[in-house]
View 1 (cartoon, one colour):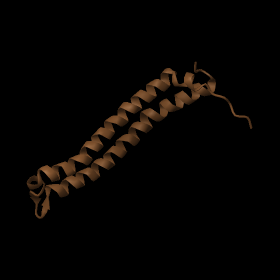
View 2: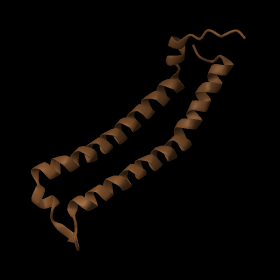
View 3: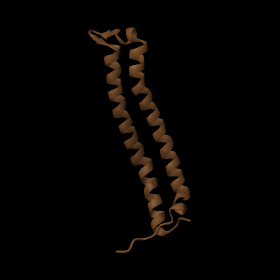
Length: 107
């Protein structure tokens, strides 16, 4: 079995690959910023606004409890949003890029 040599620089200059990379990067950075902001907001709020975080919302349940539940739900939402976006946009564009590479249409 012989290994084919690829010109990675020309593959990286493909318009479809550039589009895929830039859109995926922007999408992932947005999701990462949202997730990180929510992750760090809990200890920040607990440290700087403990009275607010201890406020009762429903029975014995306080703001902190609901904030943690919201973070759990947000994590699942991010996973679902990424999966949907990947299946509907990134995967088809990746298949196009791979078929262009297989046909040798990169330059």
